[in-house]
Length: 89
Image 1 (tube, rainbow, N blue to C red):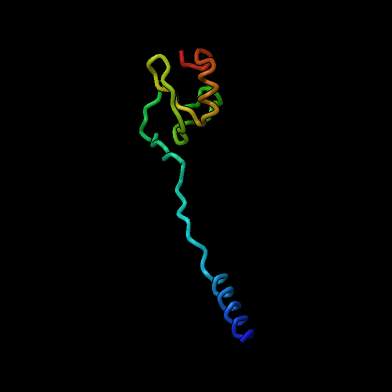
Image 2: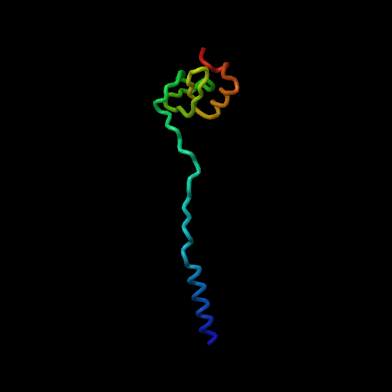
């Protein structure tokens, strides 16, 4: 009798451990990237680091009615600190 109960308990514990873990659906919290191809900017080089922005345009800023393109968010932030220093004359 004891061996039957022990066998049942072992079977139940073995089956419970063998269950597949529940699948969790991961939801991306990242925002979709804005498509910047085709955006007309007044500069061909990043005004801060002077990198070509034609194929690597990552962000833009409008300053005095002109759209400036940047290779990165860092360069955009630097431009915003003192735009007159970097703006086209």
